[in-house]
Image 1 (tube, rainbow, N blue to C red):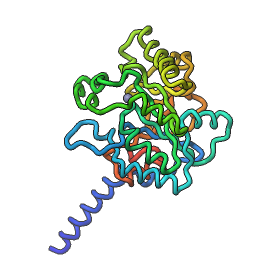
Image 2 (cartoon, helix red, strand yellow; image 1 turned 180 degrees about the vertical axis):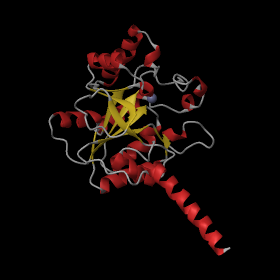
Image 3 (cartoon, rainbow, N blue to C red; image 1 turned 120 degrees about the horizontal axis):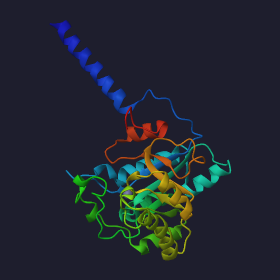
Image 4 (cartoon, rainbow, N blue to C red; image 1 turned 135 degrees about the vertical axis):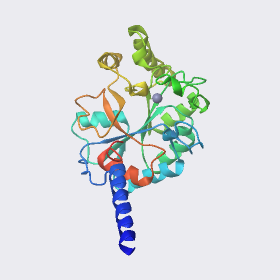
Amino acid sequence: MLTEVYWVIFVLAAIGSVYFSVRYGWWRPTVSYESPRVLMYHMIRDGIPDAKFNGLRVSPEMFDRQLKYLNEKGWTFHTITELHELAEKGLLAEKSVAITFDDGYEDNFINAFPIIKKYNAKATIYLVVDRHDRDWSGKRKEKNQGAGLLLEPKLSDDQVKEMLASGVIEIGSHTLTHDNLMSLDGQNKRKEIHDSRSKIRSDFDIDCKAFCYPFGLYGMEEVELVKKAGYTTATTVNTGIDHRLTEHPCEISRITISGKDGFYAFYQKMRTGKRGLFK
Ligand SMILES: [Zn+2]
């Protein structure tokens, strides 16, 4: 009887350790800190029970804990444009990190901005120019239509201006309408990529050097249009740590920070670029 109990415990422990290893990849080697980390966030707000897209909602408490950790561990924060320019000059220090936010949600101003200032951090926000009253949830997958991103308040121009005035926030473009670029003809692709830059430049009286592909969808045609429009970097949703930032600055990989992750997953992602074996 006793040996059977031991066997059950042994088997359960074995299953548990395999699960933990696959989920968190603790055994993966640390990627050199000479390679900068580019983090992808969307919203900083509590998740909504039973809602879709809770992976995009990182709670303010968790965001605070993550920035506190980076600050204490000696990471240096840069905007994506600073990160790229330093890398080009060969001046990028070890443990450099760029925080990025996609879409332009109002909680970036209400919840994230105070935490960014608290830890002397910086961030780049990729703004959808015509972001109000627009639902892009289903532009990639039809089944996501109406799944709630429409109801999320977006940044006002005044909030954007206040963040720009602080000097710690860079504004990049995430197109005019967050359409799926792969579904558009050449002329409309160009409009989304080129005209969004001109609009951001004139609306906020700034340069706009950073671009982010909606849904991370792009091909060589989009990369060329992005360069031609005058952007110097573009981020994707290819996951992981980018070792060759200067070789392909318009196809930058990012580390996905999910609202579904606990702090241990964040720690692993900073170390290896991924949480576990697959994500
Ligand atoms: Zn987006």
